[in-house]
Length: 121
Image (cartoon, rainbow, N blue to C red; front, side, top):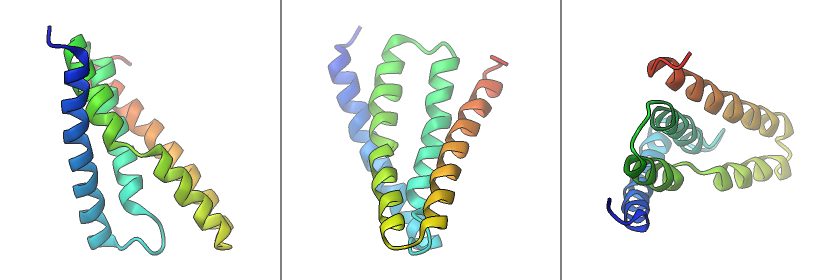
């Protein structure tokens, strides 16, 4: 087996590039003024991919490469947290609460869908 640190590092490099690309494309198409749609998109998609890796019985190497590395760099809980606080501080409290709830529900729903796709449920 390849050194897990190398797998995580390679996955993280790919995940970071995908995160930047996804965020840029989504922001260009939907804007980012009302809500940080790019962060929402990567959190939901990343949760789905991580769910596939976790529930499909992926090898340890794939878990390190895709799960810990790529999904770890792709998803952005810290960005989501900062964006929620910024919405709140800007007086957009209802939107901040909605954004937090939708991120959580979207990520959990994506994880549930991944379980269904791999036949765990």
